[in-house]
Amino acid sequence: MRNLKLIIQREYLARVRNRTFIVMTFLSPLILVGMILLIAYLSMLNSSEQRIIGIHDKSGEFIQEFQDDEQVQYLDYSSKDLEVAKNMILDQEYYGLIYIPDNIDDNDLAGAVRFYGKESPGMGMLQNIEKIIADKLTDQELLNRGIDTSQIEAARAQVNVQIQNFSGERSSKMSNYIKMFFGGAAGYLLMMFIIIYGNMVMRSVIEEKTNRIIEIIVSSVKPIHLMLGKVIGTSLAGITQFSIWVVVGGLLLAVLSLFFGIDPFTIETPAQAQMEQMVQPEIQQLLVDIINLPILSLLIFFLIYFISGYFLYSAIYAAIGAAVDSETDTQQFMFPVILPLMLGIYVGFFAVIENPHGTVSTIFSMIPLTSPIVMLMRIPFDVPWWELVISIAILLATNFAVVWIAAKIYRVGILMYGKKASYKELYKWLKY
Image: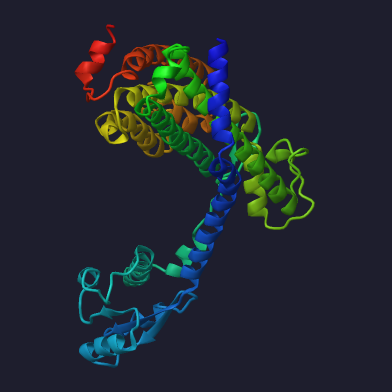
């Protein structure tokens, strides 16, 4: 056990003392915030860019419905010939031309409208054009049937459903989106950690094997201790990095809370929130929903699934590294490893977000190769405790089994040179 402790210490210090590790640990949160701000800025620029669209309305009934706004300016080309109008739009390099024919039945008109442009319009703009024409045709049809559209609009009711659980705690409509974000971010972050640090373990094994250093090391250290030391040491380095990210993220959350007038230490539930300054209430409610998430539970279970999931995959990566002589030879073994991770992300974003307690979500949160990712995405949606217990128990049992198998492969593989291992060969190694 003393040798195992020394190997863990060596692997851990080798990672955390690395200059790249230190720089990226503190730079990554800033890069993430910068990317979010850049995306928001570019989106704002895109939304503020005004496009000019020509209208060629031969019927003369729709031109008044197209009103200028911050994004689109409409110009009337109805008095021009259609070909002339199209050429003028091209010469002026405008965005496009909407053509609405005349003397066509309303049912036929719905499919006769044309948009001419150098490129296809965006979905939002196309839907807006269709809505304007469809609303006008609907109003005309209602008038033809003797129905007063103004009375319909006056009678239209607006419903704003308030969300509240059985204990009386209220939340906003953004609450589910916040849970999706936190669950998706946790699952995706875990996948990236597994890939990055798993590959780091594999490359470390390959490097020591190709340099023949491993022959000297195994003379005084058991192969299983060497494998566990690499996996645990690298895992601790990853947890250290993640913990620093959590602290930095917590500081950013505290700054945002103070900036928007929310004290996270005094507000217990949204129903108890008494805002002194009603500045930007939507953002305040959003921050309140974030504060009321089970942050402590998320962190605890993230660590459990991070350690278990990473340990599971890192043992596989270490076995792969011991079975090959170079990194190029690992390709035949990598797809079966990456596939469950990709499947977990796919199930998380398409099944868990839509129905977090459905059959597909529940099953994949129990399968050990996908449960670390899928269950992390389910946890913000209040997973029953017994499902968590079963999932963790299965994951831990699988960890012991995989570590035992990986250790058998590692013990033989680290001393094998010049021979490409196949799955059949690996099976033979398990019998040694």
